[in-house]
Length: 136
Image 1 (cartoon, rainbow, N blue to C red):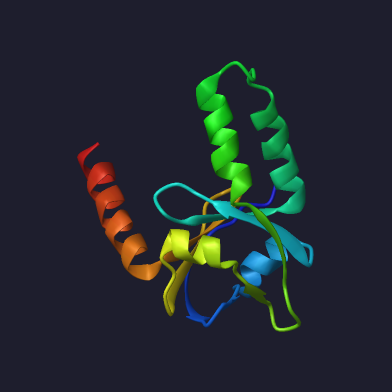
Image 2: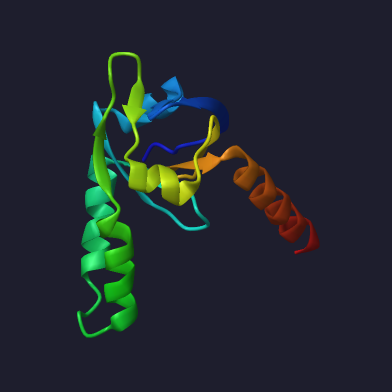
């Protein structure tokens, strides 16, 4: 399995985000899935990985209300996006608004997926993560 790694500061211009080349290469296709993540960021998945995640999410019983809510959360905001010729994507308004995306945006590798963050939110979250790691 290829892993999404690294941290990239990107400019978000209007509705378009230029996705870093290393991230695009790992997506390994012209389309990918972008969904609401946790902590007010967006999760980006190669389509085949998203399909595996979806299979796992469909396993919990429909009688489990938490499982139903998680499915609603993940799938209702998900979109399949296509890169343009310059490696940019148009991020839907609902996802832009959810993540609070502004001109200064971070794209980070997160193992099996990548995440898109408002830069200020990412820096704050990273500071908290670093404190947690240091303090065990």
